[in-house]
Structures are given as C-alpha cells and as structure tokens.
Image (cartoon, rainbow, N blue to C red):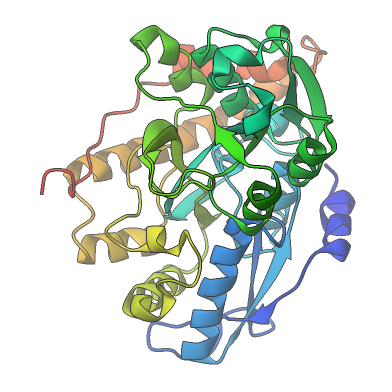
Length: 391
C-alpha cells in the first residue's frame, strides 16, 4: 500500500474527540498537536466500544484528547500506525504479521516492522451460524458459503485453522470474499452460511434477537484437530466463555486470543506506562461500561503466548503489578534478537528473491519463501510462563 493510500483511507475514518496523551503525573500531552490518535475496528463492534470506553476514562481523568480512527481491514488498521498517522492501534494479529514481515507485509514497502505490545485483553472469537441452518459443527460446513475476509490475513488464517479442526480445508467450502463488517448483513440476507465474530457486540446481539445464532464448538478435540493451529495462528488457544451471545451462561469453547493494543518501539516509555497506569487506577469506573471491558483488568491481560516484544513502558507496568517474570524477559529479549536479525536480513532477501516468486500468495510466493528462510535461519523462541498461573 502506498503512503498516499494509507493516508487516503483515513478521510472516511470515524472520529471520537475524547482522551489524550498522558504524562506519568497527568501533565501535558506529548503529541505534536496535544492529542493521541488510536486506530481500531469499525464503530458498533465490541472492539471499538472497548476502546471508546477507555478513551472516555482517559479524557475524564486528564482532560486531554484521544482521536479514534477506524479501519475495516487489517491493512487499514496497521498502516496508520506504521506510517505514524496513529500512535496506537488495536488492530488484531496484523501487528504480529507486521512484526514478522509476513504475508501482505512481505513487500518492498513493508518488511518487518518494530511493533511493540502494550496490552493484551483476552477475548473469545469464533464462527457462528443461524440456529435454523442446521449447521451445528465445523464438519457441517462442507459445501457451505464461508467467509474469506478482504485484506485480513490474520483472521483468514484462523478461519482456515477452524476448518482444519473439523477435518476440512478451504477447498471443502465455497469461499466468499467479504469485508469483516459486511458478514452479519450477508448472513441476514442469506448470502453467507457462517461468519467470524467476537462473541459479544451490539451488531451480533441485534442479529440474535431476530434470528438466533449458534457458535460452532472448538473444544475437546483430538490433538490432530489442532495440529495446524501453531503454524496458522500461534497467538491462539482454545478458550471457554460464558458470555457468548446466544449462549449466555453456557460454556462455549472457541478461539481465545487478544486483539492487542500496540504501538511502535520508539513511543515514549513514560507515555505508555501512564496510559496503563491510568486505566488500572480507574478500573472501578471503567468496569461494566461494555460487555468485554472486564478483560482489560490487569489480572486478566495475556502475557503468553508472546509473539511480539512488549513495549518498555508496558514491561515497567507489568513488573510493578506482578505480571512479569524471568521467563517472560527471556522470551522478550529473544524476540528483540529476532527483530534485529529479520531487519538485517530483509533488504538482501528482497533484493535477491522478489523476482523469483511472482505469486502474491501460496507456496510459490515471496511470503512463503520468507517464512521458510526464517524457519531455517532463526533460532526457536524460548518458552515463557504466566506468573499468575503459578499463583
């Protein structure tokens, strides 16, 4: 995506005039114009509502401003961060692909990026169908219309992992190219048999009110049913929730992972720390503002699996709150070494290989060759454990 393209999409962004830059003591804003810009998913999604609630808390406590921008694709959420139009992104796993320089980011324009994790609230996501469809398991999707989301590599990998759980591949379904935000409308209109979504949110609540939904279960499988998950979606684990729309109070197992808040490595550490400290210290006010906001609590944020380095300001906060340990530091340091090795290797790799791999996707693409190079040349990352799990 060109610089013009990255900026052009912002003209249609949704704006929210709240929140702002914080100093450690609530001092003046650090941005060039006294504001902080966050980019996230479209208005009406649970993800947007969470970010808006946090922005409101920040502005109420500091009197400064946060501007929210939205993007309907992974690229549209990451591009403003990388091009420094936005200061923070709640963008999903696209930040992982940007860090690794994988898939769409395996290009001359992109390559590996110095992305840092700030906060990882857990969430549950999965594929739902209409109850009246008779599609009750993943295996029942054979021959059905299944989403392939436009410019959203990370979710498409999860959609493939879900198919694999049911013994299917993308060749076993009818793939429908569609934007993330268009899925629910397509299900309503009968153009899509299944859709990928957060288990909570206003739009899916509305659908369930008029046409009850069913979440396809992803728990209790044999090891071979999860065999491709580490490769396709290393940030994902099976997770159970009691809050899924259509199944409130019932345990539903689907995908658990974070749609993280991320920034770049050179964001001021004091600013990052102050954002987290403000959120933590005012959490009693924040609690209950959205169905998912409880997952932003300090004792719930995910520190494993760690697939991108944390920002120094976030590490300071996590250490103070007892959510950091030596194994996490080793993993973080190894990711920094990986980042340096990728940054050194990428320009030469691009120069020597981009003409040899003309395909944009698939096994003969440059992205596939880059993944293979990393597997052969970079050391495995050390394991890490959550200090809270041992408590």
